[in-house]
Amino acid sequence: MSQGLIVERVTGRILTDEIADRRTRPLDLTGTSLPLGSDSALPGPHSSHYTKLFSPDPDATVYNVTELETSPYWAAGGMISTVSDLNQFFAALLGGHLLRPEQQGEMFTMVPTESWLPGATYGLGVSRLTLPSGTALWGMGGAIFGSWSYVYGTREGTQMLAVNINANRVKGRWKDPIGIFTELLETESAAVPARAPHQAVRRSALPQRPLSRTMIQTNLPSVPTQ
Image (cartoon, rainbow, N blue to C red; front, side, top):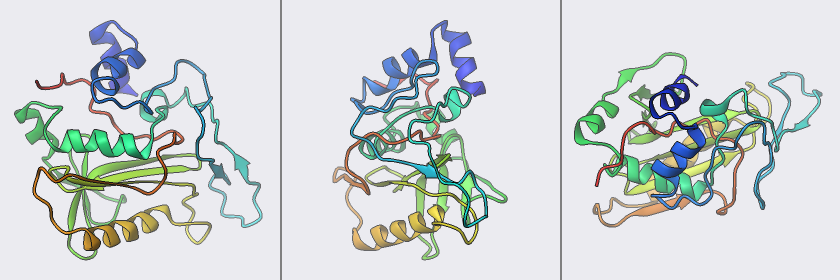
């Protein structure tokens, strides 16, 4: 939230326009946007998302929150995207195409985390996730009611996997989104051999359709490198 306010104060423009001009249009991210105001509509076709509002009760009411009004989350969780766009954005970010070298170095400076993803360390807008197999991957993930989105891959961005899962993270109830994604990452990292930097691989666990809100940082304030 605070980053969005800083961007608007510094630029004198609304965040939606800054994201479009600095990121989505230059990268041709046609399925990514930050809706204005209280617009809760998703462009179709899109995935559907349901939630028990984190209730541990197995008989709790299930709510359809596909078109959730997310203006309270705004810069922190109001963006719409697709798995294809997430792959493309993080490939550009990790590959050094969006930040200056000194900013890229700061982004990759990791610190330990507590009570977060197992085996994870956190940098500036990205994290490093060490899988049980020992493989280290870089990316980010986030969630909002009923929708969990994760995208991780090699440090150079040459192999990426983006996934969106409809789940509530309640221990012992429904699906375990982090566990599912960890298994997918293990399978992908074992199945796809190491590639040269110019041999990019982009994997998506859903068709190229709009998702629910992502809650994934966009590393917006920095000007793209030429």
